[in-house]
Image (cartoon, rainbow, N blue to C red):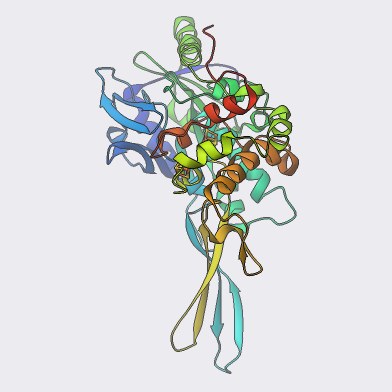
Length: 387
Ligand code: SF4
Ligand code: SF4
């Protein structure tokens, strides 16, 4: 079995994959349909996958429908995938305990956690993980909790065979093929252990690492036929061809220059009239990493917990500095979000902060579409020409 050969995993072999991951010591996280959306959570049974479910997304809209396709990955994405698995929405980072002599002891908090396997990571999710790696692993300060989860993470990537109306990974340079090279810089660091593409009756499967190979050997798969390999290629090409949206200026450094030379563009006032400053876009964005920290003490003074929690540049507290809220209106907050996401992110990380997943568009309650805002400022269309 080598990394280039494709094998065929029938749909009824998915449980064998979940079991093989379990035997190797991983807790499997995968997609399920819950509360009208695709969510990623612990997955023990292949029957829990969202069989035949398809997401319909447009600005401010997300809904699931059951199709008659017998597919486990007929959808494009849900509100979250990998980010909360590695960068938890809320977690304790250290504790202070008063010892028997009455002195304070500072203790790092790093609970022992079972290694995780994510089943169904998309190309944009892996591009976003590569961006978050730059934040939490490749800077001066490494986050030990993220690092431990990331080092143990087993990735079963699944190529998309369907794009929603809000997906624009082709123009963002991140997908829909997990293996495609991109222009935004994030695509170079794709890491997966197993890569699957859904086809009639199952999946064309490739391994991407030694431990991926071990899992595949345990499943004793047969080589995929050439017709199955061709169908896998066609299905991913279909997902690319159906994208209707694009991000202007190729999601590149030109966006940074455009935005910083248009800080007083009238479009910022126009979008501020619609934006609710709710922060949904930042919560669903797979690359946003801002967080706040707070302490919670026991009333008897015996212990205190220092907690980290996801924050948003749309909150007042995010720009509180020296007794003043610097970004004191929605115009400044939206401008901060966009100029950071696709502008100063390049200066910080040498990559765009946008991987083209479209989540911020779908989950914005008033349907603000960043590609449209960038089109209005750049004068370049956000509609993709049909290939
Ligand atoms: S900015 Fe929007 S489209 Fe881009 S990665 Fe974040 S959520 Fe996805
Ligand atoms: S752009 Fe939309 S999701 Fe983001 S803060 Fe404004 S209203 Fe909320």
